[in-house]
Amino acid sequence: MKVRDSFSELFGVAPDLVTAAPGRVNLIGEHVDYNDGFVLPFAIDAKTYCALRIRDDSRIRIASKQEGGKVFESDVAQLKPLTGPNWSRYILGVIWALEVRSGVEILIDSEVPSGAGLSSSAALECSVALALNEILELRKSLAELARITQRAENEYVGVPCGIMDQSISLMGKSGHALLLDCRDLSTRQIRVDFANFGLRLLIVDTQAHHALVDGGYAERRSQCEAVATALGVRALRDLTLGELEVNRGKLPEVNFRRARHVITEIDRVSRAVKDLEGDRFEEFADLLTSSHYSLRDDYNVSCSELDLAVDVALRSGALGARMVGGGFGGSAIALIRDSDAGKVASNIERAFMDAGFVTPRFFDSLPSDGAQVLN
Image (cartoon, rainbow, N blue to C red; front, side):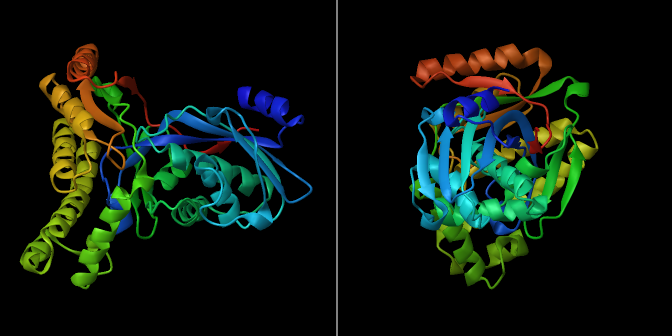
């Protein structure tokens, strides 16, 4: 295993164990996880690998092959939020949130493209959390690890993310999407059977890479919380669209539009589950497209590259398409017929070239298993 060999070369000793945790594609349910809503992601087959060894002192030595393999050193006693190089904070935050007291050596190697909206950060956090949970015999459940890694990203890294990305990275199941209730973390596996109907989910990495620490994500979360507070509910999940519209005059217009996206998106998730369970893929695809327009117009988290990828995919025969992830760049998905794959991809690539954008990358993935200990 490459990461095991690289660990031995870097630290001069074999790791205690290796874990892997996948990135994710969220089929539908964007920006609703921190509003206590429902989401429907699946784990992709691209993974982040963590090779780890426990030390007999309190020193922390960590490295990432994606960051050149340079070792960053600290001490468990020195850990506090927002310290360390940005890439290291996702690792240090998990150590901090798990209240680990022994030193560790960690090497990360990832297949999940950073900034593509496929949750590379959660894959990193979950690979580390699973390794520490296993080697230190912490006996945390997967739901508990999801909460802990979310806390690491919220408080240590400084990104106010929801619970979805960590949950699917830990709980994914091959051939299924995960219907996740973000309020109580209850789950239900939903069969996803695109392949047997001659369909595939094309993932388009626009390479307009985003960073959620720039404030746009936090601003929208704050706007949603302001609406919930103003209308006296725990979260936007507890509002109906009718109740929101009746109270429109009490809200800043931008906050009304943010809340409208969340409420309609939660409804789209419910309808999408029924369509997938009934193999009604055209209806499901229509929901994807509606989701994109809502994210673009009400939530304002799309960008020119994402809009172009979606528009060209639809003009090229895609059943439905939308941006995925936090937005401001990253990836789009398109549900397409197998026979249209080459045409859709080539048309998007040509349109990007004509617009002067960076050449996009294309791949697809079947729903895959979540995090696992490899040895």
